[in-house]
Length: 529
Image (cartoon, rainbow, N blue to C red; front, side, top):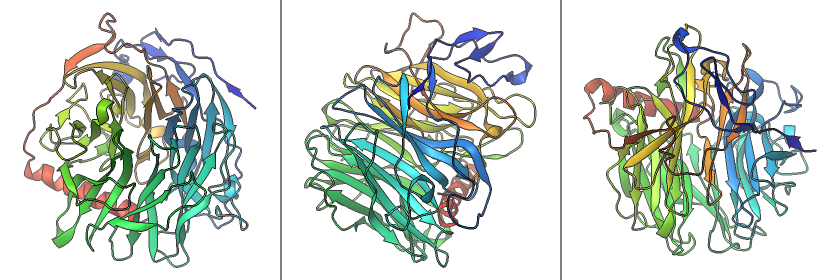
């Protein structure tokens, strides 16, 4: 079966973006969105065929059938036309999804074929394999230089750390470009004493035999060290999972992801959440390995992370966004780039998008710059990619059009690009769409992260947005922005200079940061992964 979707260029019709059927049909503030055209767009997720009771347990929470969330996209270094996509299919209000939806493309994303891996009972897991879990979430994909793909997902049953609960980090392998996947194997499985969370997987860019998986492992004592496993034989066997960094008994790491540098160095990027003594702070940190993960350095602090999170400016309804997570990418010559939500550019009033880089394997870092174009509004959930020629791209959502009637929350997806990290060009990808039609999972939820890759010449954003109408419904889309760096001849693309000035957080801002950190901790411990 092949899904085929046309990708005609979007047009501005009556002040509204018409984009392959994705137009929200909403007019912000009664006037219409700014005169930007969206770029060609293809819907990748498809209507769900999953049965309501496929998980085999008594339901808790609300099941949002017909929703996609938290997408991930990988492009093959072996064949740049081969893309593999994954997302959460049918999100639950109290955490996880019925299954991981998957699809593959061999024409650069124009058409897609459905695929499946048995990460939960709803997608083929059962008593005879490692996928015997009620729900799955947090999917991550990486493709080795030889084209072999690896997918990692968190699978779990029951409330986090509750009696009778269980969780596991599962990995599956595909040798045919993502069309079929092996039955998953468990890198670590735990009962109620521990909860494995927020994993990522990285194929070594220099050697197809090596693949690395990393995640945080929460305990009932609120600790959450970084755990690591690796294979040195292309997935035939995996090393026993072990802790590679422990932040202390009242602290945790989150968002661990390993970057493979051209010189063979591995850099694990994560956020450390510290809650000792009743205070709460977050910091972006890295640890490094020069021996394929056998040993790791002491942590280097990149920067404090001062996110306050996103809310509907009219109603105060919370948006569950990428707060306290970091997006990472490696550019030419091994330069590392990191992006995250941060309120430092508004004194703690609202989040913008911070960007920093390191040219010495993560030992030192540049001063973070604000890179979202409209600094007066909330911007959230950044995703980062760097082309081989050094062009930087960051995608994110913002609420500049959130001026509509009560009961709607209009959001847009944007991409900024820069050749020098100073002057950026902004391109409108999609929107406005109504965020109120997203599933509510401790906040309106498109995902804790979105995705952005490049095929060597073109950036390929992959993100979730809600659909037209009045029902809660969302899908994952890939966009095809122009290949040009700035497209300065195009009046629809706005250029701006990055570097919004740092403003010392007010006392109220500092309190909001601490509240957000506590909320992030609570979301993980109360099972909304």
